[in-house]
Image (tube, rainbow, N blue to C red; front, side, top):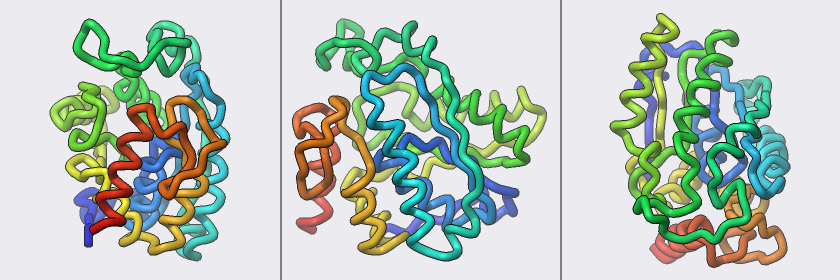
Length: 242
């Protein structure tokens, strides 16, 4: 059983803003925040993604989450979506342009959107500051991931310090999945919300880079061959076969 606590919550955090995409990881992060923080809001980003499925999934997952536990419904506050589609045009990633997902000359996959998490965190911190929230919750992970440098703990620790200095207030970046495998992430979902949460993530969350909502697998919808699907499927196999 995977059980995580939050040091921010333990020190009396006012509330948390979850960077919420509607994918598996952000769904588990939302459940984590609703378990550990007294007040939770969500923020999403339209950065010019090739597939609108992700933006639709986030609203479905968020709404379904409130039906799982009365206390979660009571703690969940507002949601905002920020249009930064111009940033996606600058990035020219396989997630924002019609490009093959493969290993690029830089040594990173072409699905890498340069600095995406850094941009998201700056935007989220500005909104959290206005809303009186002092914790940012994100699904970044450096265990089972695609090698993106803005998912690494060192990067996020530096960003946390920069945001705290730039806003002149303590900002905590809570990354509950940082050292979990995808299998352990499924296990954490089971711990936080039981089978209902696992079923919700399987049925309604979206991870596939190809935007595929036609092909249903035991772990959810997706093409089954893109890096995101492969990670999700491998994690499910690790957890379900344990």
